[in-house]
Length: 433
Ligand code: UDX
Image 1 (cartoon, protein in one colour):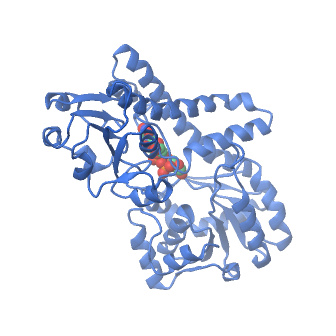
Image 2: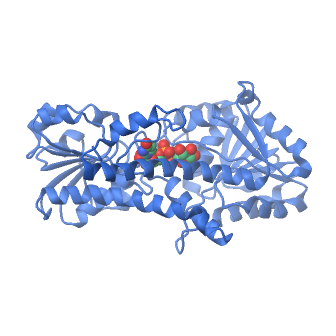
Image 3: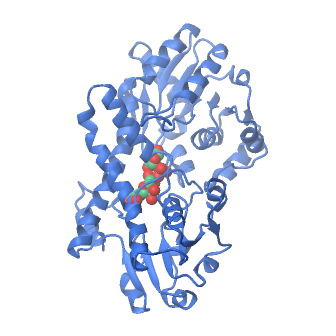
């Protein structure tokens, strides 16, 4: 099939290359000329395992192209909308500027019978509004949310847990058939496929992310209780996680969640509920956000306390800047926030992250960065681990103790064995343990 993907950021670029890998002919469209030039040259604009391979394979096959010109999308059977919906600058709501602009630019090129399939996370009610704009062209609109995780984006796209189609009841059969053709090879593996109305499809996405955020803040709230009772939140998570109704995944306490989705989605969802007169239904998400933001400050407070309240000029090694491992993404990153706050308090912060330092340096040129993890640790008076990269997990407490000036460690992701670190002479502090 011929497909277009509007928006070549994280979601769109991965979707375009993944669809080409499934055998479709795909054009990726974006207004950012630099991004399009990079993608056309086979260069990934972000770090994502496996993405470069399918990007280059798609380009080499001739089935994958990129362009800034919407006219090049004209002959596609399906147009996926994968542009960003960031948090608005003036409120908690979602900024739909990019969604609206992409529909406006696409409409003059839509052929009758084609399908516009929204992938972006949008406030409930957006699809119904956009369907009215698309309708006069003879094209139709569906909402087909994407659940990809960074670090697993390619796998999540070509081998998802489920496919969700939000369609207009009046054209349901035709819309389902066209999406089924796009995803035929995925459906062959008996991937669950759920067909529903627009509003439900929009809500599935944002409620899934809200649930995940709630799960993380729940365990971080338990960490706060554990910290004043001497309990161990890690053992607690293991024990409650054995209950299949609860499950152990997403119960890792630490410095909290970040990234381009969870934080802005819970805020946008709360704002949308308030617009709908149902603010009280999602009031708890404000607390989910507050708990989450408290955890990063908690780590900063612990570090400052370890210097008797004055961190000024003390050398602090911050390991991690990305919001999670296997990513160079620093959007709303708790790890970066910890480095920035300590730096703001006058600490001599030296950060290291295997992938995210270039992005962090662009946003926060005041920070100092080490060339290697070893360099960051050299002479440190406190070590703060805030992203659970594999290479940090395998740090040896005895060898590390020999590098630092003061063996004080704050394990912001609970990745170390406290006994082993204490036995090696470290003052170890985890999160809620
Ligand atoms: C998320 C959703 O998982 C995905 O389905 C959606 O499409 C986009 O948003 P992503 O932002 O890539 O994906 O990251 P995710 O793996 O969900 O992690 C989000 C944040 O939660 C990270 O900062 C991570 O460190 C944190 N986290 C996750 C915890 O603090 N504890 C956990 O137990 C799990």
